[in-house]
Image: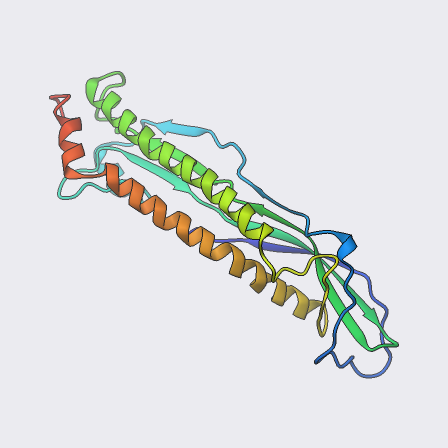
Length: 230
């Protein structure tokens, strides 16, 4: 899994309480269902696929992160997708010094699953337009299609999971907290609990479907179409 940068954008509206910190244990916060659900979005922005022909077979064997690994032979082609999962949250915190009550809620949640890069490697050992180069590119395009299709499905699944999540404090359902730092920690954990299972399902489905086209039988069919493999 690629690193997941998390940037919390917090907006704070509070009145400083005099004396010791408020005792929030067991406290409740006023609910207002009329304020509506959490404002959230899940995006996958377009990323162009780059086809590189500047790496030979020897160099290809040393590239990490590819979706195809030959078993007992040379890696003849490679598709590399740099997956990213990041999110930004808006957090609001209010403190009522008279009731010694601090409440927090999420004002927004923006999830971004846009890949950092999508690169297909066709070894420079094969001339452009040759039978071998065409077959390699066609095979790697299948890997690319799988990545993009499952990524779009994962984004849709995340939208559904967020829409049905009951642990994310929306504007109308604030929760008691000690302070803003505690709110941010709790909300990050809440979001991870919703997103992580969906992301794990995506990675597992990706591994399964990639393996289905990277079989010895499929490799044999590809190599039989050309006769100048190296």
